[in-house]
Amino acid sequence: MQVADNTAVSIHYTLTNDDGDVIDSSIGGAALVYLQGAGNIISGLEKALHGKTAGEKLNVRIDAEDAYGEFMEERVQVIPRAMFEGIDTVEVGMQFHADVSDGPGVVTVIGVEGDDITIDGNHPLAGMALTFDVEIVDVRPATKDEMAHGHVHGEGCHH
Ligand code: ZN
Image (cartoon, rainbow, N blue to C red; front, side, top):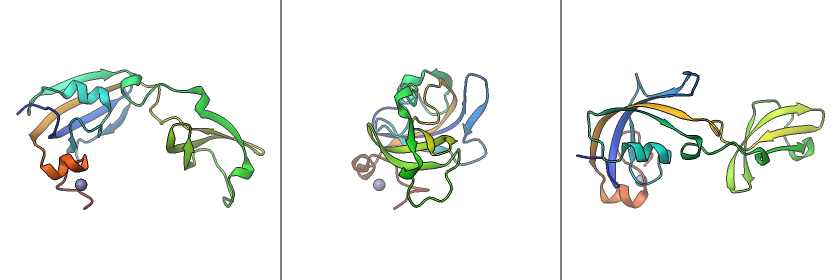
């Protein structure tokens, strides 16, 4: 059957950036299973897979805006060390959950200079075009529960 809203889709994928560096891959592991139309995966990849069938392969380059969004300079901020109350050592690369302008998100420490801590609230892949090499392994109708929950059930399910 074809990939359409409310189908559970299994894919194997390899994700690369424009330099050809592999960022992520399911090869050698379990296929990724997701619910089409529920925003489980980035919008550009959902669009590219729509209407495709099991066994098809595709290679698609997705602009940042349809992947993890543009890099936003205003999400990079310098804040005082005092805001990291209860944390003994603040180091570059540490990640924290925080309330950023558009809701809860993850911020990464990208600079430490005395009491000035520079944090970045952008997704690590923000501002990057992403290329997906995808093979569609299986497409099946989603169950009523899956549609209600907005995600697939089965192997690896958390409930
Ligand atoms: Zn569920």
